[in-house]
Length: 243
Image 1 (cartoon, rainbow, N blue to C red):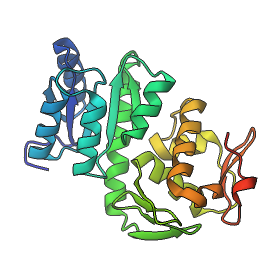
Image 2 (image 1 turned 90 degrees about the vertical axis):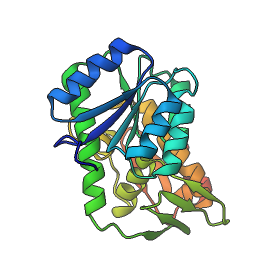
Image 3 (image 1 turned 135 degrees about the horizontal axis):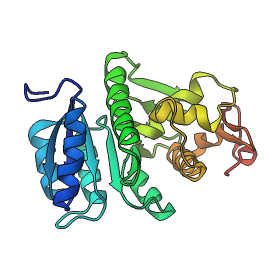
Image 4 (image 1 turned 135 degrees about the vertical axis):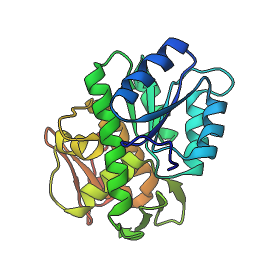
């Protein structure tokens, strides 16, 4: 980052409401972040090209270019930067589309300031830790090849797909200890930080998208009713729960 970055990192915030931009920028700046604000998705993409911020926070409904399109364009520029949607609605349809565009998380504008700052801080910290961890570039996962640095998976049939950061982190967690059942709370702690409890529907959608991107290897991600998820390398498609 450039010298203007705050000690805790640089955030790009895109929202078409001036009061929203001003209020949440002040909140983050008070916690040591530097914040650049823009009013639409097109401006967000151009701002990210110019600076490469530590985290991008996007409203969904914006003029010129909406948040979904901006997310896809920013994700194409940088596979690793945390991209969070900043919204007043977390409907299932919005979650499906947002995660499909490569988003890492959704933050409800009605959440408390303390939770808002905590989740931004956790996302930036995890991204920096990953960058410094020396993660192996390519890992074989149940017949699929996963590039955790480029966030790309090549399925056993040769089809390739981009992973969101959340999809990659969930896969890394599960395949790190094959056979162990991870609870929803454990998975969310890995994805978004200790103390965060997400919606079961969001986790189900995340698991379904990850299975789809892994192709035939997706059968290795098994839902254990009432307990969580596990990675079973020897699972076959007929044995894997799709819940």
